Length: 89
Length: 405
Image (cartoon, rainbow over all chains, first blue to last red; front, side, top):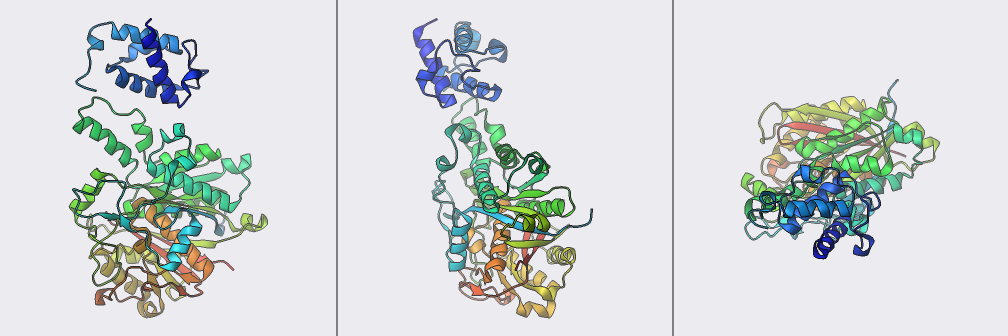
């Protein structure tokens, strides 16, 4: 789990939730951060833009914390086809 | 349950003519138009450059950043107007009242600004995805839903879309719900935010927008001016308003509706005339009791003479004693918010005994030979007034109000 990836995910989640970045840590749960299902799709949209990737639904099912999100993202980024950058940012 | 009398105890406005009901009324009575160069959209490729924007409306003053993610401008305008109307009415929101309050809003275009931005990304910028908040932001009922959540109102709530008559139909529905005991109070009106390049291009193509300003009933009128805004009224039974010592702006006494079954954009005389007659019948009054009409008065070549004929058909000889003004000359044509803005102008005209003028008026047109209260407000104690809304698609709604003393 790269520190750079963690920091980028934290920055995206904080921006999407309009929270100060220091409020979000690797150990934060979505519940603690007040992230509901609609916030979740907003965060996925922001992460797709940030990393220029497509995130399939089945890769993020059950994600309820920052750590789980980073782990899922690592798999997407490292799994070939789905990590292929979309046409352009 | 027998029919109850219904009164307006709260009003709220966000418009080009003013960002509160008070500012709005001040502008209208001074004949001051809010029409000016469009700033929300780059007009370089448009054949018209003027609009009626709520210029100094600052969403950040009214909503948290996270809330704004979920609210298109049209919903923001509606919610801010609803807050003002509720404050103005000073109702105590008991749990029982929340359950028995209705919300009926009018809207024509939904969150088309949000949609336009997403489509620019998709089609022009070749991006592969649009913002996931697009659907909740664009739905036409977004303002009604937000109002219900904000106030915890759980009664019948919905949105009516009949183009330029949307909010008149909405107010009429809310009036009937309260009159017949289906609701104990209602927040009702409409909101619209039509300024996106895509939407302005569509209006340009229809060739009904004025290249300068909106001059209803004037010989040199050249079309309508698009406007944005939100306008909401709080309605409650007269008895409840009196019991709690509420300040009453006016009584709402009639709704008349009709369809032209004629043409998708061309106005007809008969449809609007039948809607006015129906409003009089619903109010139980005769034409000679009406002293003022807030006209649909778009300032297009087609609307104004046809509306004149419709008024003459209904009011006959009494037309000579009738004042008919179009406040669209000041707040623009706010489409789904138009009926509500004009209903509030009508209510305030009755309350203050002052008829708002038709602004920007230059010269009379023999085809529009009505007393249009040109350019200067006029003191007049009027007992009954109508507010006309005639939509593209030939769907008409007319509201009748009575002065409260």
